[in-house]
Image 1 (spheres, one colour):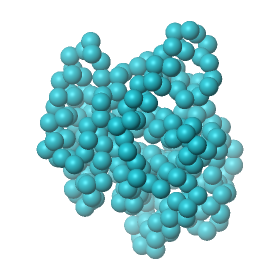
Image 2 (cartoon, rainbow, N blue to C red):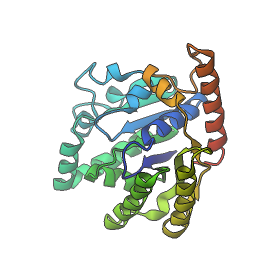
Image 3 (cartoon, rainbow, N blue to C red):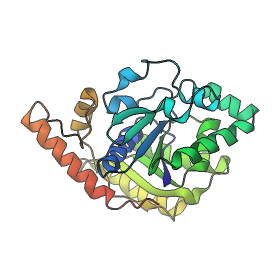
Image 4 (tube, rainbow, N blue to C red):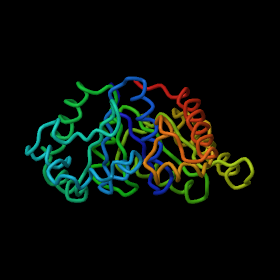
Length: 262
């Protein structure tokens, strides 16, 4: 079992989308997958078209489990076969509780340990903002993937992320992969950004592997709007979208070959 996190101190770089697709990929292989949303916007639910389940009940959030008002199975929300999601209600309040009550950190660790006996992989989706909850969960992660947008703001987010790890005494060796996102062979800026990122990664995270860059694809927004994963059997309404969906799935499968999870 591995606890795997996608992280970056910059919003809009594709963290949530990437971890959703990766989680579904492993679920389709027959692995039991849990994705914990540490972002109370719970955007991961939209990736699978189950955002209606966020507000379907008001007693099945992560906070209820940690407070002892729910059991492990009570807060699991099925998104696909073998794939379950956990939603959060108020991460700011939860982070404050973690800061003021140290026993709550033990409760989070115990929760991760207990779920690890049921799931092959636990994936964690983070917001770009800082919080004590993020620090605790990153510290519990076996492997961290940094998703970096290939533009000047994305590169700034990468540097801010490294500084965040240093400031909070987080283990940099747990950063196993760098995921460059938004590459385009017809645009100069992403090419230059990728070169800069590779140099920065060599300097700041020498033990991390820079994955092949993900191409910028408009089909991703179409998939998100319909709540479809590239690994779903669902057919897209147009031939062009369907062919793009299949190409995205193929590209992701090729990328996942470079990732080895514990």
